[in-house]
Amino acid sequence: MLSGMCYLRNMRKTSKQLERYFKGAANHRRIDILFTVERNEGIVVEEIADALETNFKTISQHTKSLVQAGLLNKKYRGRQVMHSLSPYGKAFLKFMKSF
Image (cartoon, rainbow, N blue to C red; front, side):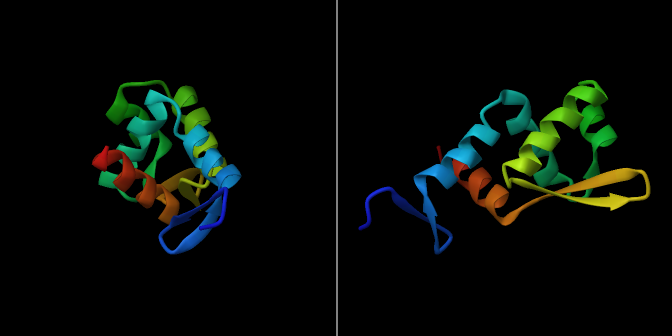
């Protein structure tokens, strides 16, 4: 086994790359967002904010961080942005559920 290397879904990831995922989800709101998006593929920020009873701006900032961390995908639909879990977001949720 190579030092500093981990395996995630048959893809080698360095500890630095894994750090990005963990830091991206290192907030209770972001974890809630991941679970909400899992249940509602293609959900928009306004719907996430309503589901979590949080304001739009807060959710928008957190979804941006999750996208940058590689845990969420976004797709534009007119003026709205639809969100879905990335393959790494799905793997990360699977890990969290097993904890």
